[in-house]
Amino acid sequence: MSATATTEPEHGPKPSGAGHLVPDLLAHGLKLVLIGTAPSRISAAAGAYYANPQNKFWRVLFEVGLTPHLFKPQEFPALLALGIGLTDVAKKHSGVDASLPSEAWEPTELRARIAYYSPQVVAFTSKRGASQVLGLPTGKLPYGPRAERLEGAEVWVLPSTSPLGHTYFQLEPWQALAEQLKKGAGSGNSPQVGGVL
Image (cartoon, rainbow, N blue to C red; front, side, top):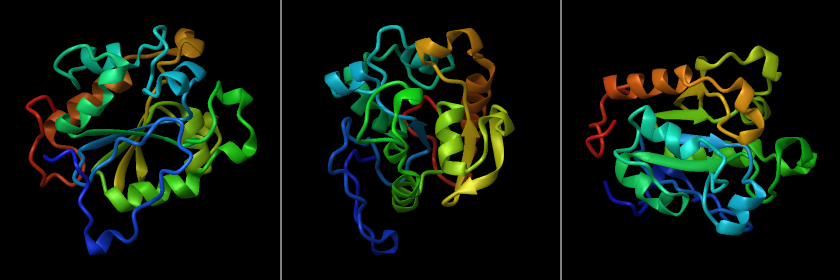
């Protein structure tokens, strides 16, 4: 898989990344796109996803077998070679979810990115991000796969790896997603990428 996104007529115009605090990591043909809420202040300053050393994200990806080794936050571009992309619902603001202004949330823009790149599976890395995009209260969003699709992609909701949610963290939904990807979730006709998924 090439790390360079290709422009294909059926995808329409490429969504703009102007003003994003951390760049999208997206390309056509991805198996999985992990969708965060917004970069933390530490991540925004580092220009890298999940850069807070207390965030479990990178350890969880490794523990469940989505990466072959424990990545450092600055290595995030290497996920493309594994068929994994990253983005956020709020790309132009940073901080904890509760401190984000209402205009920070950009579900329409997120949907445009997902429609353009057409990943097989999208997984929200928190209920708050999923709530903002799917239009459901967090209490009505159990962890795991969802019946509805997002712009054609299979949808999962995962527990947040943020240090603020450590008392509620569960590894099992992350493990279930990794197992499903290894079995060939999504459209089922794409080859497994990078030998890890």
